[in-house]
Amino acid sequence: MPAKQQPKKQPQKGSTQKKQTSKPSGGKAKKKKWSKGKVRDKLNNLAMFDKATYDKLYKEVPNYRLITPAVVSERLKIRASLARRALLELLSKGLIKEVAKHHAQVIYTRAPKGDE
Image 1: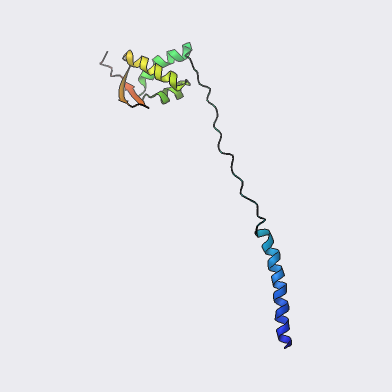
Image 2: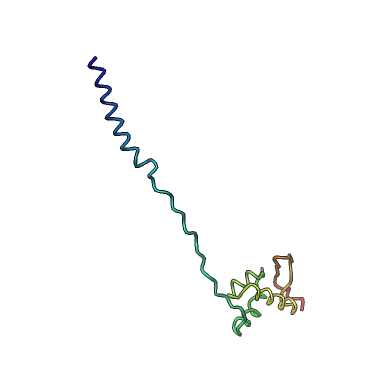
């Protein structure tokens, strides 16, 4: 009979140890914090042409292989609405050629050298 009493004491000690180790990993664990997300730098693009940018438009843009308002806006640091108007002006003067037109996107390319 005394052998039966000792196993009762050992599980009690083991159970108290298990309870102590299980407390930190239980409900008191820290919650995951959400990231703030990536912040993009604000673009400071021109709303109107200055003389240098206007000259650069006529000099460089007709030589681009792919011409879109996004490309012109990024390279000349102008707003996209201004780039769309500028491309319409270049198209009317015959410096660029329209490839595809969609309600949201217009794609141009350089005009062939023979057509003038």
